[in-house]
Length: 142
Ligand code: CDP
Ligand code: MG
Image (cartoon, rainbow, N blue to C red):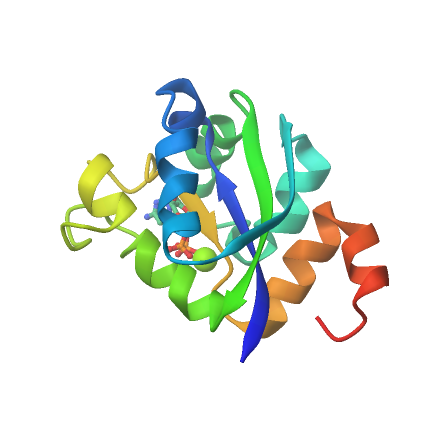
């Protein structure tokens, strides 16, 4: 099934100039970049994107990091895109992420794990609507 999903290169990936290498992996897999923007997250966007994590111990330092510089946000589309992108991204903790995944190849610690990707269809819909309202209006099915 063709799906759309939300992907973000975090400030560590942008600072390390890995945007091209990261996005190339999704393109190579056959996923299409439908929309893309570079921006720095503000308080409101962080609380929308990471609502489920507010109040957890790791959140204050994570929040400082995630607002510390520009991120690249993308809408990706392709076969089984949500699971497929999560598989290419790898496990949350880069020490547990398999070699060959983005986090496995480039990451060392959980806070700086380079990318965010939607974990299920409801999340993809919600996260895409935060950054790409036009895309959601054009495609009411996502
Ligand atoms: O990003 P993913 O869905 O794999 O993981 P999550 O459990 O939804 O956590 C969101 C993000 O919070 C992670 O990608 C980490 O960057 C960060 N995090 C952290 O800094 N320390 C933790 N103990 C857990 C998560
Ligand atoms: Mg998550």
